[in-house]
Every structure is written in C-alpha cells, then in structure tokens.
Length: 161
Image 1: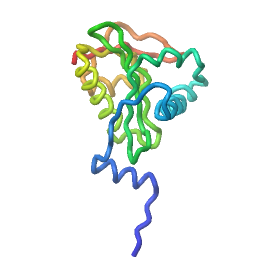
Image 2 (image 1 turned 120 degrees about the vertical axis):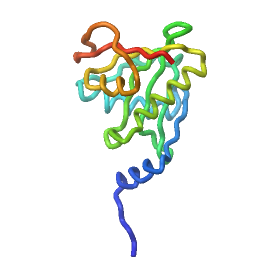
Image 3 (image 1 turned 90 degrees about the vertical axis):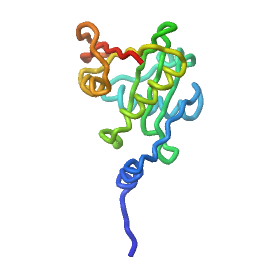
Image 4 (image 1 turned 60 degrees about the vertical axis):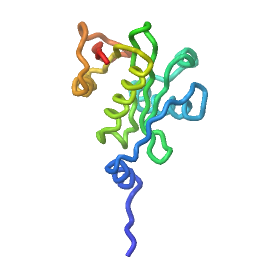
C-alpha cells in the first residue's frame, strides 16, 4: 500500500519533526533574490506595491536571514543596524502556505540570537497592526502611538535582548 500526500501535508510533517534550518545569506545571491520575491509576494503585492531598485540598493549592508525546509526558503527577514546597540528587524515574511506553523516565531528567535551574538542590546521594529499580537507573544513591547506606513496602521515595538 502506498501513501499519497500533498506537498503541503509533507511540509507539515517535516515541520512537526522540526526539520527547519535557519541561515544567513548574503546580498545579491540566489537566496537573496528568492527572499525579495517572497517579501514582494507576502508584504508588497497585497498592498499594490512593488520593490524598486532604490528600495533594495541599501540592503547590501544588512543582515539577511531565512528559514528553509528542504532547501526551500519559506520565511525571511532583514536586520538593519541603527546604532552600536540597536538593530531594526524589518521585512519579516512567511510564505502564505507556511503561516501559522511557528516558523515566523522561530525565525524571530533566531534573529534575536544573531543580533545578540553581534553584541546588539535591543531590537526595534515597525509592526503592522495585524502583527502586533504576534510580537507581543515574543515579549516585544509597544513604543509610542500607532502611525501609518505604506498606507496601513503600524506600531513601533522594542525588545531588549
């Protein structure tokens, strides 16, 4: 008897046994290109926005992190230096088919460790209003009042690491 399962069911089984790899990848590499595509699909396209060259040109100096299942990028984020003690987390994206499975949480925790290993003391971010509770569950606290960015409500958040 042969068991047939869909690709999504296969990925779910892989995640249950925690077969997720987290890696840093460099700017202008194939993984970077995949991350730009993922960020565009998840974060920009739903708002009717597209990346422009100017949006990406400054990312050469940032830290690019990804979550991989079977060598397939399923989540990514960018860390940008603010000052010697603070780093900003931005462009956190999880593939639509992989959301709600804990990958984003694990990627954020991995990013916190990467930042801590590089002697940063705090992470800041601008959370979309739909993601505020996600970050609160990871012990981020709100800073200031809500504001609008890319046409949607956001809240600045911070965490000491």
